[in-house]
Length: 294
Image (cartoon, rainbow, N blue to C red; front, side):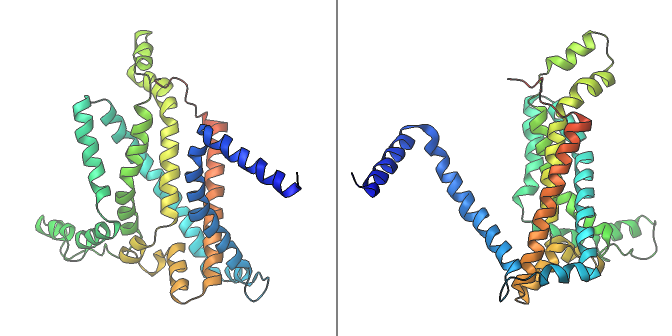
């Protein structure tokens, strides 16, 4: 049998074996991942280092211009803080919801999900109305006699934090709630039966088992924050621009190579932070999933 015929026969046998097993079910997912993530990422990486030949001028431009480095660190630090604040606010909310009756849980989770059905752009415009000089907050403070003239709340760093937290908080709540629902409810009760106070039962039993959800919510919120550009552009000032805003500006100016370099740096920084957080959590916090309900 010719060599090429033997290879075709082997390929056909391999395809038949794949189709007869359940492994072929992952093929559509792999193809989608390769087409919509791997291929664009490779294209961006190539665009950042090839510009009329192999070059590193785009990364050199980033490193030598202090403004770009400042925006990069601002994006990184702000995203970390947004993730931490969303977890600190969302964890107690999820804890409150998960200890309600099933009917109440469904109603409260519906209230949490409603904001996610509204466009981020619309929610950001809503914050512009709320925080404006003639907005709801200023009018309420003036009506109560607490201030004499409107406060400057728009186009500030505080406005960016408030708007981003409000937009991303439902995601943190959902991630924490999902992990908490998997915890075996008999474990905290058993701790109380053995003499532990409610606080000790929470700290030594419930909290360690729910840390995985808190960590997951931080990672998701952090990733989304790193790519935010609409909210900082609309409610923040000139000093509140994030790296995604700079990337969008360079794309508009057709600076594809530099925009690709910034996007690649954003992706690498996000991956590094997530890996470091996971390693630190496993090393010092001891995040574990034992005790989860089957």
